[in-house]
Image (cartoon, rainbow, N blue to C red; front, top):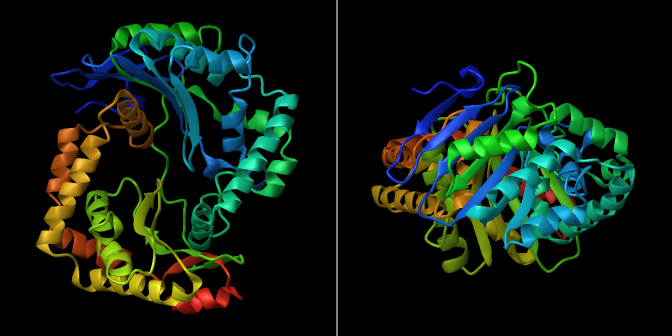
Length: 445
């Protein structure tokens, strides 16, 4: 078994997976940075990303939204590149570049032709290590973030998920919106966001990942060259291990309401779920597929196909290092709200009490397997898989191993998981024309 990165000797390289088409290899640099690559010799593209183990749940109340704000600001320029230089470098060769912030990580990435990979590495590494985060940029980009927040508020189907997280996890870093609040973003100074950048973007918390038509040793040399002079190749820090568990403690079931005079109600109801390292996550994938993972799911069939009560209805599972959330979303006319919530509750109760049939298990295992494999057909998705796995789990399972884990899920596994997870009291959030939050509480009591 390959040792985790924090036990690997700095300056060494190990092979994590061997394949007929190419291998996955990992090098640990002095200072704690990890480089992980997957060779895909049959493609002509390459993807590169820097994954940082910091997200919105790492923020204090005064820093709320700093991770996402910083994601914007790192594109604004360095000592050697302007914002235009950064964007045009990748776009001028037909590539694409972007970033995203989650509750426990942030990622900056680019996808280019294989011949342009050295340029992508140089540009993104420069952004990560040498961004200026100037006061003028903070003040200018603040308006962009506030506009993004307004767009989120205008989209009730998006806003309701933030409200559900708050209802389920309370006023905790994990329960707060990734984007922050109107107050925190309005008042966030350059000192706060720049200090967050310097304290949290540490080499031991970074994974440099690349996939495509590449050579691992060459990528390592290119990254070391790009990091020269940054100070990140100094010191004796080892890579950080996976995020510690046991920190999120969901409280009492909650209810959140955004009162809005609208023609549709957007609602999410759900319960705490398992964490991302729980071995039952494969059974959870199947359970979610059975309940609301597609057009053949129970929720879709009962709510939309049989009764025509809602256009959109689905379930989802979101896992963190130490907790999770299982939710059911629906969008429906206000007059159908009670019926839709009641049917969703009935379906949750039925699967909690009776589990799933063998036919449902087989059909939805096929859906999970196929979805996973089809999502890994390009260099960008392969880069995301290896980067996220290294940062979140500290290990990488082969696709064949993941398929075996899914195949091993039994009817009893799903039934036992449903009986435990779905037995908790329901939290609920809604955006719509309600008089008070009491109406939501009654719907799930």
